[in-house]
Amino acid sequence: MTDTITLSRPGSMPQQAFMSRLLAERQVPDQPVRFATAHDAIDWLKSLPFAAGTPQATRPSRGSLAECGLYRHEGRLYVVREFTPQGENRKVRYARELVPTEGAQADRANGHGDAVKVKGIKAPGMQWNLAPDEAVSLEEVAALGIQFGECLLCGQAIETKESVVDRGGIGPVCITKQSRLLALRAA
Image (tube, rainbow, N blue to C red; front, side, top):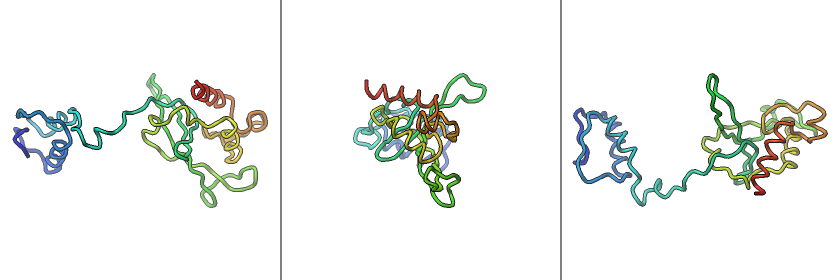
């Protein structure tokens, strides 16, 4: 390795390779440091700031957590939803990219008789990259809901007359959430 870190017990080959990578990308002090295990050394290295000029050092900081709703980011549709893990008092927000499927993968017909379905693909971290100005208008949410036969915000099938006719493809809870999101965009 280097003279910077010494270990009481040598680490495995993968640990040594990982420590070498961390040494190259982190701001490591000049004075030597001694650790009992490679695990301890890796934890310490991971806590150090990135060195100037590394891609991680120039990466933009993470944005704020997006509100629940439907977004269009770089031409793609994303939905941010939340749930409460069983036995916990906190809510967790997550994002999914909504991708239309057709043909054999589709399981319902839209208003035109075409077989369609929207597939939600995990989009780890996107809930931190979406901004209120990317929120989809209520008119577009309604049109997409009618096109795909389900509320794109919650994923429920659109079945009631009120959701189809009065709100045009979006349920009462979800229309409130999207309206709140659009109010943030206007602010």
